[in-house]
Image (cartoon, rainbow, N blue to C red; front, side, top):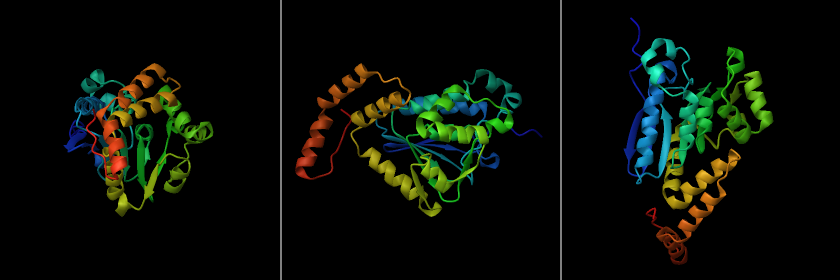
Length: 259
């Protein structure tokens, strides 16, 4: 009997100021099917529409984070494939999510999921994990946005090393090249994610989200300077900036409201 690949789609959980998207197809290394792309895009829209959210965590079930996009999914679920945007469009949309994003990497990261994770603002990995990009080994020419992201985030030499040799890298090397922003023992992963999420939630959202947007534009060589200056002006006139200055003077933690 053919397995129904529409089962176990990515889920969205909202708890306070934190959203968590989780991949659930662990029996297939959380590979991403065409139908998952549609669901993930819906989740991103839901998060952007909720002004109370301050951070998004991308997580996965099972021993591996993700095997990336399932190329065979187009043949197995033709209806979903016909209506689904491309994997590259989904990854680019993830980069544009309004709030800061954390990728919780509890295990191996392979194929397209290497770019999916790289798009997050922070990547917390564990000792013993690995990643590799097998495109050249499979005869796949990677999409332009992913190639650009590897170069802008990791540098030309590292991008060539990963794309042209399909070399498998371990956790310590991933931290050294900047693919991981944090590396912890597996038992400490959730605590590390919680600490970083709490730190991001405590920041002034207008300033934080505006600077995230500007930094990503700079990475793409496409900074909208006028829009950046306007966001800076709005922050300067905001109640949050007054609260931040008052909290600094009073030596207390600020309470920001995003206004």
